[in-house]
Image 1 (cartoon, rainbow, N blue to C red):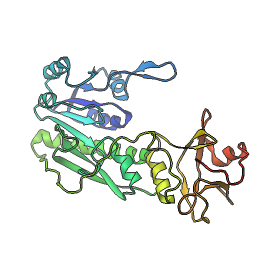
Image 2 (image 1 turned 30 degrees about the horizontal axis):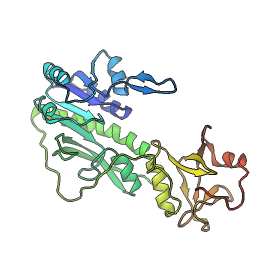
Image 3 (image 1 turned 90 degrees about the vertical axis):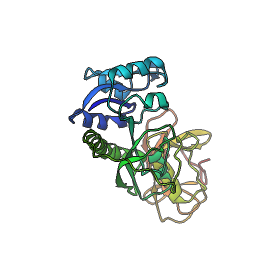
Image 4 (image 1 turned 135 degrees about the vertical axis):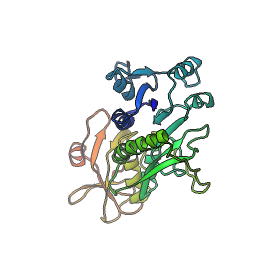
Length: 307
């Protein structure tokens, strides 16, 4: 089949690689416009755009998919279907109707669970034991379309959102190509999502990533893992922001919530239940370091707490 791929971040690249290795023709990619990045705020091409540039594939970068110029170009390319992975913009019905088989989206949850922008982060944050990925027909509603295929993935006790997303991106790429093959030969059948079990996964904000030390230890652990690598879990000490890597739940004696203390073999922080052991710490303006090294240079007062 003739394809135009829509996607933006690095998580979409395994699917592009899988499509390139398939028997389908990739005519163009659609991605978000170049965006300022780094200290110099220079315009930088998205990972999907860079991938296509390196292979001489046409790159379309509309500000919004509703633009007539973009839709005219999509009609001229005449794709059979537009596969999507993390494109990052709402697609209007007029654009959805252009490909013969519409747009199909690889989503990193088992729909209807965790519809929205951050399904993997919410699955980790809420303590799900199993998640997965699915390929569904894109329609005007938010992640509401019928599903062509699914896969499941166990969430491990130490998984960060980044770890889990990396695995799902690879297995999901294979699933999406299987669906494309099924659409090409008429085998693929989309099944409506059940009405029950709907949950929403809005974007995780910087404020969501602030650690709540008054939560139980398991919830502190989940929040930090859900926000790793982005937007990055954080707390404050002496009015300064401190970023935290994943922590380790312990069975140590309870401590006041937020209190920082040197344990026998770890730097401990109190929660509503048992303390957690800090891993990497990144103070404002400094590089990440082991918690013990951070504490050595801090001269921590007894009873001092994260705020």
